[in-house]
Image (cartoon, rainbow, N blue to C red):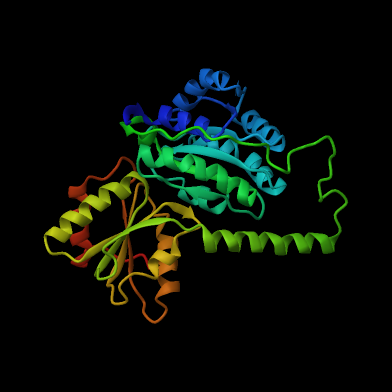
Length: 353
């Protein structure tokens, strides 16, 4: 039965029901309610909760819990996630699984408290040092966020990787009807510490390092082939296809449906995985499409690079224009998206690619 829940609280409860039994983090708006909720909920289910002295300490505690075979979780936003990057890089290097929640807020440095999508590049490129990627899930509703929590842990354990749940601040603060999933029974991951440290990189030779690089490429290739997720609507005959994720993806879907009702041949691809990027969806676009249009909550246009590359890879015989509508922060209303669509169509907006 659905009940009205605040986003951060529903997300935290979904993590518990997905088997998360360790949380460590440091409070920061707009994700703090996840931490507050788990401060008492973890004890009820026999888990462990730590309010760490810093974001650095929190992610390092997650490394320890993941090494012990526990489904571990941390959450933050903006500069807090930046501070966790070395730990995320280490988790990926060690082949440990964990889930990291980021409720994105706008701005460089300390930034602001406005909901935004300005951290797309950091999350999809691997924000720490080294040669790695994280799987990045980007839900558009509280229910979808809740429904993706269990798959997030399953993907993390399947590929021994970090899965980033990339929401926007508004998803944590808004309330919607939510149906919570059942509890799942979990076991310690098979690579958990057992008293013997046999980490393969100790005394590694150059030939072994090259072998590991091959394995790494194969793993990421498998993720790209098998784990692309998206929602699509009306792309087979569209003259213009919008590309938008998260809450702006919901607004864009509303705009697409209203434009369709008015006779405009438009469609939508809503990525659910920001990485691996859903290139397979672009292969399904009308071969005679006139352009693609990203709708983004940032100032510079970040997803446009991935969208333009995807249409180029899947429609190699044509140079299809790619446009970016950037709204900086706060979810653009349907009315504004429709107005800007006609600006694109009338040549008032310059293509990015």
